[in-house]
Length: 201
Image (cartoon, rainbow, N blue to C red; front, side, top):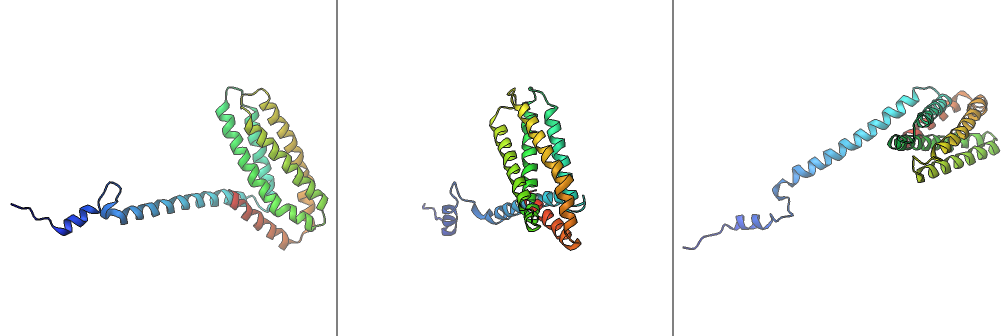
């Protein structure tokens, strides 16, 4: 006796191969979109929290000084390690590089242009050049093994260069620029530094 095959059943089976999602496509796509949305929200929320904490430091000058303190703190943590703590050194170097990238971006896109507008072009160019030296330091440190005997010496050299650079900014650049600008312009700089930091957080 011949068996009748339901045409609907046949067409349904022909669509359910090993790579087909069958009739559950909608929920799967919905779950994927929801997951992507949650990841984006978490990333955006982290950035907002990080930058919100920085903004609470006060005006643009206080925000930059707070960054300087954090950078010095990370460098001191690295210097306190020994050659056996290679993983910790790598993690701290990554943290330092990220903090320096963010801080440099804030200064190079907001503060140094403001210095140039304030007729302090030579000073802005010199500070920019020093940022280039710091980026070279970080690149070279990333190429070295963290248990290399010369690695920690290079970190100390980096710290010395950064401390000198940051001290000049804190003692001269920030107070002089702040003094030259009116309250509205200082407020605008604070907003711009905060926005630049959010981009890099």
